[in-house]
Length: 184
Image (cartoon, rainbow, N blue to C red):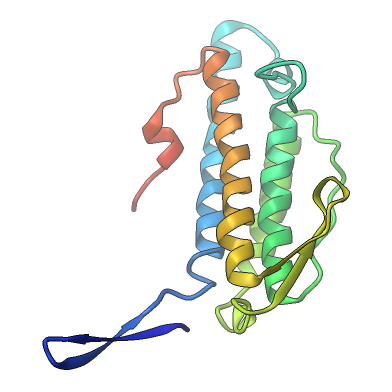
């Protein structure tokens, strides 16, 4: 855990920075839970409009972007791979073949089940652990803290946001409060 000593009116005080665990696992769990709630909204919207839910699962914002299913897959991948890389463990592997709401629900459950196995102790030392990724064939080496802050979390929220935007563009009644989720 990082600490900072700063003088304050002639005194020393110590601030404890939140752990890598608290800035990763619960945040990924919350985002995945919010995506799960969207699946309920997809089913309700499809039933109300008399359309197949799979139309929404395969919907895209624009032709050169991944469909909703791809956004869910990438959010899942980012969460499990980020934690595995930071913890120095193997991540579970999932095929990217989800085509239904039930498939997406199962993928989210498997991802959440993996995240539930991670403890703060699992993440000890992850802030300085070297993480190497190769997006687009370009090798990038990070220290764990930079990887989480500069790549993993922004990438995760890009896909969660894009999923939200796809649903919004298809007429689902989802808004900022849905994106933020419950605070209880």
